[in-house]
Amino acid sequence: MDIIVLIKKVPDPNVPEHFVSISDNHENIILHASSQYSINLYDLNAVEAAISLKEAHGGTITVVTADDASADQYLRRVLAMGADSAVRVELDPAVRNDAFQTADALACAIKAKGIPSLIIAGRQASDTDAGYVPFLIAHGLGIPAISPVVAFKSATDKTINVGKLSEASIDEYELALPAMVLVSNEINKPRTPGLKGVMAAKKATIDVVERASGQVESKPTYAPRKGQRLVQSTQFIEGSDDDKAAALVAALQN
Image (cartoon, rainbow, N blue to C red; front, top):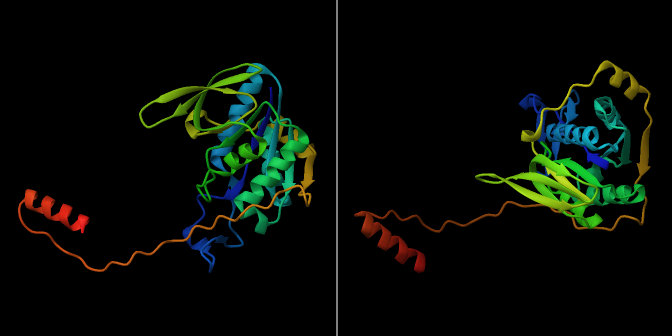
């Protein structure tokens, strides 16, 4: 089973609050120069899930990220855990802030490499908590996607059965491969890389893919804005519960 795992470099969740600010347009997070980064924690769960599948069914694991050279150390961390190869899609910060362009660039890189049996990602990134870039990639590749997954039940060359977290239970789904699976932290505990893996990862070659112009379709930028609601007046309703209910219904109807 050939697997691609998507990872993202995010600000360390333990960074002190005074090292973080918001840009003037309220759309970007600005970090102090001394702030630290880490691999998104859900993505580490995705890596561990991929390694477990490889151990059970064989195959290869390629880890992919969209970033600049500063992300190479995190790719090497995943290689040390047990991934076989790493690919970095070169994107500057301005492009990475646009989820649509990031997803298109990653989808193009995956298409060029060849769509694998399975793509695994974390359910969301801790810096934005959005969780829709993997779905955009899946849409671009024309494959199904499911989230949040907390268990892999079984897998064959053509299908995979997963446990999806719902409000009151864990529901089982069968997906035809290739597919995109977004995992949650309940699925496993990521392993700590061993010394042998760390030494091998230091010597590993990271493939760098430039974002080729003309191959990525332009998509609109999603920039949510806070709406404003004009409050005209406030009215307090007195009386019994029945009187209050009747008065409220009458006010809503007018």
